[in-house]
Amino acid sequence: MSADLHHLAAAYALDALDDIERQEFEHHYPSCDICSTEVAEFRAVANALATSVATEPPAGLKLSVMSEISQTRQQSPLATSSTAAKPSLGFSRRILLAAAAALVLLGGVIVATLPGSNSDPTTEIVDSLDAVVTRLDPLTGLDGDLQITWSDERDLVLVIGSRLDDPGVDKAYALWFLGDDGVAPAGLFRPEDGSVSEVLDIDDIDTNGWGITIEPAEGSAQPTTEVIYAGTI
Amino acid sequence: MSEMKLRLLRSVSVDSPPDLDALMHQVGKGDEASFGLLYDHLSSMVYGVALRVVRNPAIAEEVAQEAFVEMWRVATRFDGTKGSVHGWASTIAHRKAVDRVRSEQARSNREDRDHMQDHQASIDIVAETIERAENRSEVLIALETLTEAQREAVTLAYFGGNTYREVAALLDTPEGTVKTRFETV
Image (tube, rainbow over all chains, first blue to last red; front, top):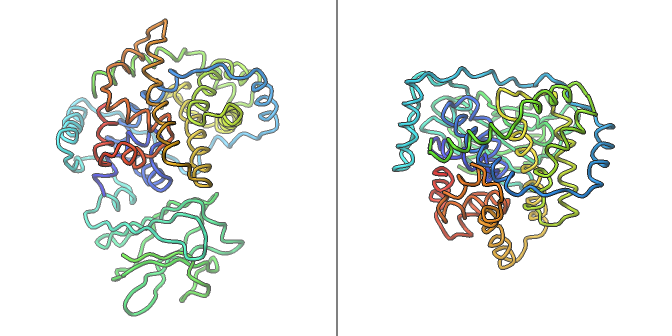
């Protein structure tokens, strides 16, 4: 898992990841020195490719664009989730990174976390050796994607999803453990614009799989609606 | 970092004159006239990317418009320390084009053979551009240094709007190999 994530910088910059991987990587790379450097570099390559195919657009396009923006509200300048500015890398650290990158290129060796690298819960999960990734299947003809990454050792799960239906007012998606002894609540989340990328603290529990239902926003002790997504580990 | 990437980085930073940053600052404050000037600087690149990825001129125009409206919307959060205006705009334009291709693919999966022909055309695009270019910028020279296999993988992804898994399937190559070909660019 961790090796995979560190390998995705180029594919990310070329927009060659599927929705789930894209979100997973977007969650990961701002806190990973190697990946943010790589993304910046590959974006430059992508920009060069874009420049190489420049084509004069139809004359009417500018008018349509200007007319639409005059009726479009700009986003608030304040980001909802702040990504703190990253300190620039020191020289010796650059050398270390270069060496690590060279190792990857030579043999596909897993890059160990370098001392001093930042850690957030997402990176903690995807970098943990026991991370188990489960893609959930929709059971009722829905077409959203949901993926659960579980670290038993750290008692955390990372929920990533896209194209999810709005759960409705005062409702939330509920994640359930599917264990030998039945079902237990694992946490709640609400997608924004159909997407979710959230870390949930969970109980130390053995589970064989995951299920999703829609529940009241405050949660339920047991599922009260039909399971709409499920996956076994 | 490979020699090629170093050269690309240098040449790309030359491509972004400082006045684009100043324009963005004005655009971030809602200045439509500045956005018009920004449009003039970026429209060939944005439309070109859209056209190359989606192929259909009418759809490319829609995608280019979506990209510009998105730029207008998020200009308030543009951070010049994280990259050039040009790079930022190409990222938005390409993402919009790829999203369009993927949502259409999800609706109707095209025949594999048509697929392959499309891709063959996009593989050749960089080579053609390099040959046509009158003014051989450092970027083009750098692209020329790609091996055939690298160029194929990168163009199938970037211009074909494919995920690396799809590229691997098209090339009948393991996924790991495709990722490595991207990385050694």
